[in-house]
Length: 150
Image 1: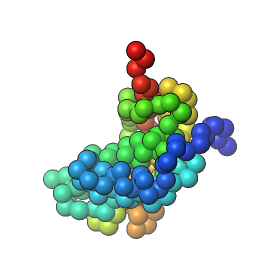
Image 2: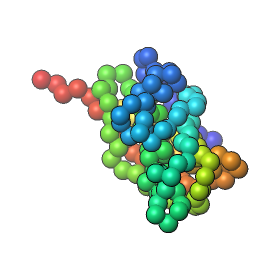
Image 3: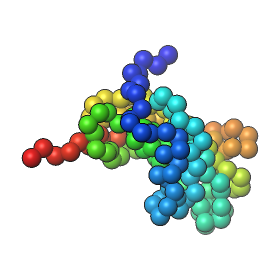
């Protein structure tokens, strides 16, 4: 049973604003990451598998899996920034790869584990969307940024 205090959503953050923020020239838009669900302490996203996301061995590139998991956790952080925070940055991440896919789509579910004033810790699982087989476990630590005082 989780005892993590889930902070309220940051002002103005909705599933639609996250999806809009993901579009465009930055990595989430270039990869094609789609956000599917936003709940208190949870973000879900998916990514269609395409040839340019594969490694030369024909399997899904590890960096593709990390991009989906880290983006899901990062957008979760955006949604749960403490009052007065100006942003965040990832300072640590770890992945365990349990499988791969060659076609279809992958999906992630990111969960807030720790919500502090200066750090957040997120866990994500990545699944083969076709059969719900877990292909990766992921954890990251986000440092919360505040405007510099002059």
